[in-house]
Amino acid sequence: MEEAMVAGGAERLRVVTIDGPSGVGKSTVSRKVAAALGWTYLDTGAMYRAVGVQCRKEGISLEDAAALAALLARLDIRLLPPLHESDDVRVMANGEDISAAVRSPEAGMMASQVSALPAVRAKLTALQQAMGRAGEIVAEGRDTGTVVFPAAAWKFYLDAPPEERCRRRVGQLRAKGQAVPDEAAILAQIIERDRNDRERTIAPLRMAADAVLIDASNMTADEVAARMLAVVRQAS
Ligand code: DC
Image 1 (tube, rainbow, N blue to C red):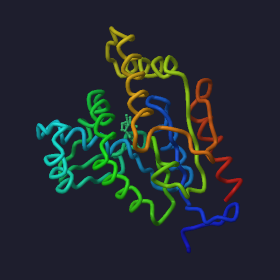
Image 2 (image 1 turned 135 degrees about the vertical axis):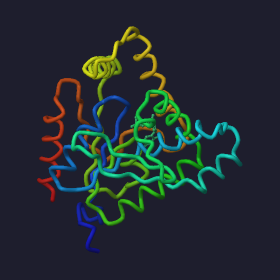
Image 3 (image 1 turned 180 degrees about the horizontal axis):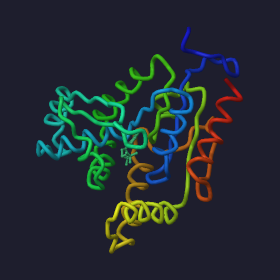
Image 4 (image 1 turned 90 degrees about the vertical axis):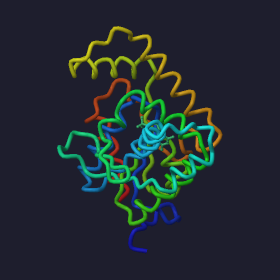
């Protein structure tokens, strides 16, 4: 197969996966790695955020399985390249640009909730696998190395303690000119999302057995990306 390579005797997809908890810097690093390789960046979290935003917009309760199934059946999610290199991917839902809405903290919490639902995971996992079938993808999320692309050739798990992730998040918000009166609330939200993402039954956040662990605490995004690229290039 053209899209596969052979590593350790098993056929491996030319895919890089980058998993880890919220706020650890996965998106920035994934964009840098994808740009350096000339591959496509697949932001799987944006897809869960899109489902959360649409549920809220249509007033669908997450307990209403039939309404949720109907929403999923008619939901067409597309990810488009950002207009500027350092921006997030653009997200279209049923032809409407919901890029701004998906990036709010509320959308992150909604995403964390809908992502525990089997019907949502089934639909989005299948979509992501279709997007990665041809290879040359840098996929970022919580389960890209464990569930979506278990045969990926290069897997990374990026980690940092919640307090460090909170510090970075507050710094980002302040850099955008936003006041952050309640840092404790941000830390509490990070800890709650960690718990949701790690304790759900299907596809919980965990490190794949064959992933490379990188502690991002004392590293810049450029340093993390450089370390990943060294691993990818060494084994290409
Ligand atoms: O990476 P993010 O903050 O955009 O992700 C938002 C939420 O989506 C996250 O709290 C959990 C969920 N998610 C997931 O369950 N599986 C993924 N592969 C990506 C995100």
